[in-house]
Length: 132
Image (cartoon, rainbow, N blue to C red):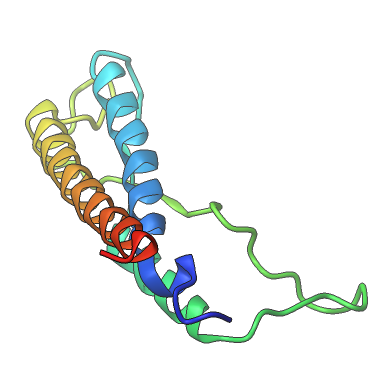
């Protein structure tokens, strides 16, 4: 592996950007179903998934050479969790629009911060390639 490879230069920030994008979709789906009777709000545990990505990078890759080997999880298959409602509605819907809006806004701000960080990394790599 080269010293200036993308994985060494970007670390886990590209994975964090993709994960934040996926979470944004989940939170938007919750908001869209705020009035759907019986809808259960979902979310993912960003910190737990990111910790898993960090530990995955430090491990050797595994390969199944026999059908009896335990299969590893495919990338991008994150456990979606149900949100615990603070005050569930009578129709069984667990979406709290205030909480969902707050989570969506925080996630959007974190996405923009990750994007700006990666943009700075790419600018630095471009400068290094140009010899600046």
